[in-house]
Image (tube, rainbow, N blue to C red; front, side, top):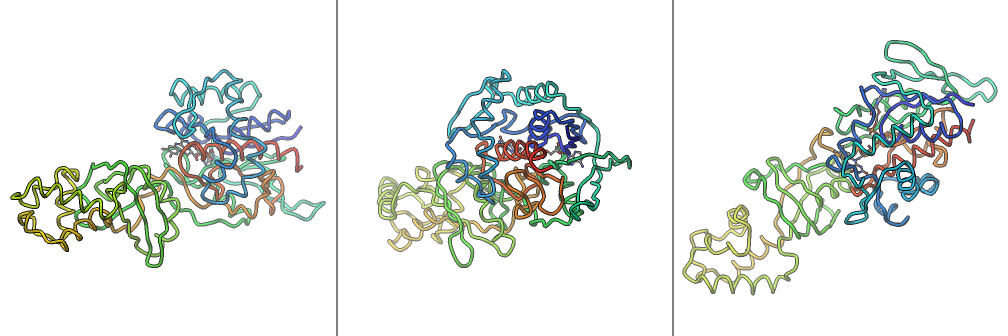
Length: 418
Ligand SMILES: Cc1cc2nc3c(=O)[nH]c(=O)nc-3n(C[C@H](O)[C@H](O)[C@H](O)COP(=O)(O)OP(=O)(O)OC[C@H]3O[C@@H](n4cnc5c(N)ncnc54)[C@H](O)[C@@H]3O)c2cc1C
């Protein structure tokens, strides 16, 4: 029997504790908050998108950073395993659009309650309101390697152990307790870190007119994002304008792929407001609208084509006088209008803060972690799981599956490696 200390009572830490305890280890789970799963509670807008029911390839395709690192841990504890685990413990599940898995009750609290029951029946000792300050590292006399031999609580109390699993999360939504403590622990252990940046996060624009579009949501648009050299990202779907820039499903996904470029230079977001129409079809459509309103001023002739809030901005981008009669608009002017609709440009100058980021990109460099056991290659007895690692995915339940799979692997790894 090993003594295993797990730092962090989020998805990864809870799963690591359950998995380590299943092998008859003595497990203590430390959580600095007054309750477990504060972030889990707010996931999926309070409904908790637990995982995604897609096949294995689908899972790896949706991981943005280091999908290959996930092979071993995912196959060791798959999305189907997670679903069976919860269902066997009495939680009914349902599958929604895009394979998203939710509790049938639509309550994340039911997921947390099921996990708490599993922790209790596995005999895990849960210490709430207990913050871990750092870990203890000693030289292993037999091997000459560094070894983690316990933790130090924030009051200075030391607790020794055979293994420590760090599942402290990233930096996103810090009010839930994810304040990057694991990065300091990893740094102290001499491990490399990849710079942390917010992802699945809204983007900021410095266009002066952006505020005028606040609240406007667009469906069925195509977005393309460019840097000075090439196209970086393309997607079809929904987006939203805010007082600072852009958000919504398409934009959040984009943020995960463009982050490292945006740290270096401003980017250009091009929105095709009418992706179903070719340039020629859109020109014909505009001609038809103009024909029906021959004597109208340009500013009053776009109501059928565009949402009200967009009209003044598109007019300004087209360079056509808003007061011009539509029957006086030239072919060339119409072509400028078509461009303004099919290539509606928004300048992107940054992302919003970690407080608004669903996930943290970066973290403990996975090159320094054994992908089957989650043990550090530098310090024996030290394991990492969940968002603290440099692994992230797009929305759809994939990020929680990363936490379940790596947590499970770390809990099992404790026995494999010691
Ligand atoms: C608003 C929002 C909605 C989301 N919705 C979904 C969704 O529906 N589906 C999905 O797949 N993903 C979703 N995610 C992402 C997902 O929640 C995270 O990827 C996942 O919860 C990470 O789990 P974790 O256990 O690694 O870290 P965390 O959940 O961050 O847990 C870390 C825990 O460690 C504790 N801790 C930190 N430092 C210490 C310390 N020094 N001592 C003791 N305890 C410590 C923290 O208090 C915290 O409880 C969402 C994220 C957000 C912010």
